[in-house]
Image (cartoon, rainbow, N blue to C red; front, side, top):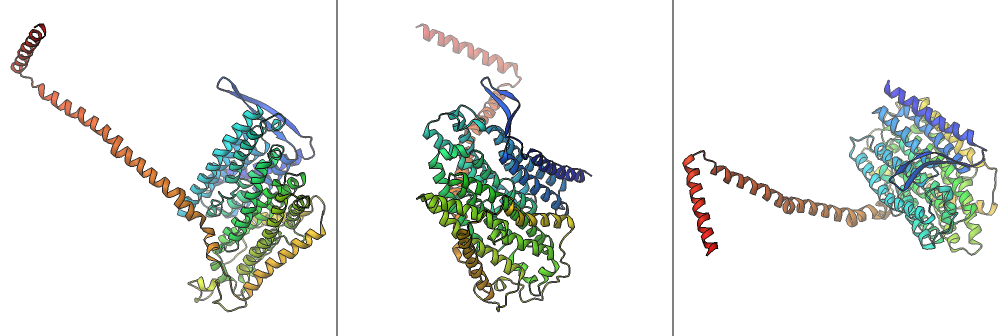
Length: 588
């Protein structure tokens, strides 16, 4: 009963967010103050809200994806339903708070609540060790970034003499203060959106339920970083150094993550690295510092929410039906096309999602990605170094994205025509490859509660590219299409030969996690052990010695209390004589 009530409340709240976006569409931008509270003697904390075009866009994205996730979860989640649904609803509410806030501290509240909810949702299957480890890793790495975020709020608020977002950038501020403040905010954005060097938590968050992954990757949490920079864009544009740092981080991240996705061997991990890479493309558009760059980044944020949410829900069906999303397991169901025949809706919708992600012409991802490339080209042809870096990086990433999309599509759904045993072939990694093929008759597409959200998001993965009309730059479209074809053809050629070469450096994801383990985790553990030893053996020794001395003293005094009157009189006489002798000595 409680679980049902929470499910109704969760779906209802998500639909309410969608309704709010619809009602606010076309309304003039406005700011609203809803009271506040006095903190200390000098600071008045006010609850200020803001509605504008960006608010409407994000509310629509958050509401639709959250509603799809809530409905999908009814057919997916079977354990701890009430707590799960309550946390998803709170997660959505926290993102809504971030979106509508016009006060940096109110935004910070939503920002931190999202972090806490992500920790609890990633660790939903707490009985699994990888889920607990992934949740803790996500919590620690995002909190590390949030330390910089908090100090950035202080620096900008004091520098502009206001913490109201709509008033930031309107007054004078020292250039170095602006640069320091925006870079500190950028540290928080990097942590929340899993950009280099705080990128490793997102792929390790995959043990969480697939609907949670869809929500985190598509509409909340990681998208909050892109939203924040877009909201404070007038401030960041004035800090050119910060935009340059953002461009470098974004370009390194998109190539790093795309290359890791090319060697990942589990569906959700490929999609996780893809999210990191696609977020970097959005940041790259924002780093251009132009209106077109900002518009392109938000356009890509919109389309990405549809096709990435769709892909994670499709991965959830595979997990739900097969029990694993690893290529080596899913390959066993491709021998007679069972996965395509039994999971028809999943196959079609996942194909649409991958096509949008790969930038296939006609799909939403094609138009949004090209808008970023076009904005970068406009800057590059004017001689901008940042424009050239972004342009080249996004084009290379487009080819790599097509490669890992086609690779995953072929290896998961199609039987390779080549014999097993080629370089990196999954059959060679499967200890059960020699056994009879599994019983595919039990495969089902899932209930309509799971399929309906997937179909809706599949429609969005196609149609959202046409929401603002078709603005196509033919030379750029031709170049990006050729790059996508080249990347896809490379993946097809390897698959046809039954090969999947995975360089060790990519399989180990450049060894970043082991490096962090040696550089940070091991020293911290040693310092912790040293602190514990110091507390136990040094400070604790003094405390124990003091207690022991008290015990010994009490035992000595207790022996003086014998209860024998003769002993007491003898002691009194000896004391009196001693005092008399001492008085005589002092007097002489």
